[in-house]
Length: 350
Image (tube, rainbow, N blue to C red; front, side, top):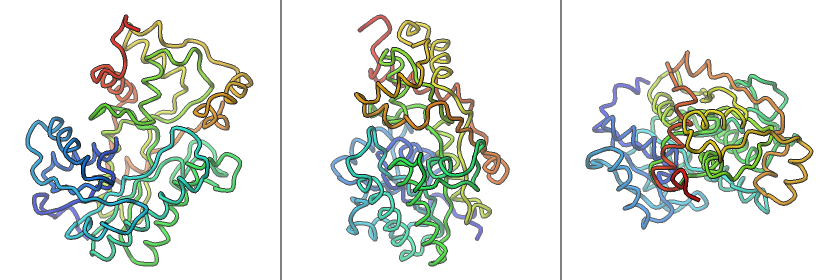
């Protein structure tokens, strides 16, 4: 199927969870290229604010932008959302800032929500669905670094958190449905997304940079992760939407693996006015384990202490021609956005 022959001005793309960090950037790039964009929100009352932020980022009127109310946990609204859409980019998924009381609080909306979207897309005759998964679905099984698209997280394994399970089970359910139904599917597996904010909602990933700049880490755990710019993750979604070769494929979208100490060092170099806030010491693992008894967010990374989670994005480069920015640029853009939006106090202020 020659997807790239579609005229953008006559092509409607559904972006689920358009109010999110990644989905907002996907919508922005689609609008920049002239596509008609329909976004899902759980509450239509949010649509005016989302439209304003996209208009500001776009630098012009958001012609061709519309909204539909739809919730991942309910059937209502999804048939209306996908009606007359050529493509669907399913970027909506819960991301925790602490361990949930019940893992099904994450797994159910991720898995059931993905199936709702795919089933509605199939009924509507959508050309292709691009699903946002995560390296959470690749990095926590029997494989070892560098992880590739051939690797899968073991949901019964010792390092599988509720979030990792939710992303893995949702992606596996999507692939099973695509095989059974014949729906054309491509999947993107991003790593930790940093980059410029579109509004004051920092989100879980950029929150790491905010906490560092605000001096909330007196010292650092031996924790690391692959970093990627959200603008490049949005770009790879558009590439996977259009490239004939992307059908039936998953693509890791990740950059260099960085320890927290490296991230702090880059912020120290790029934003010297905040140097006194940025920690220079790395804590021993035993201390972090004790501290985790009092901090739910630290408990999320306990099983990751000292582990190399390097990923290999060669497939995305070779098949899709994906060329991501340097990780330093993503970190710098996150920090500058946090400062510009007032989410980090100006240097010198408490």
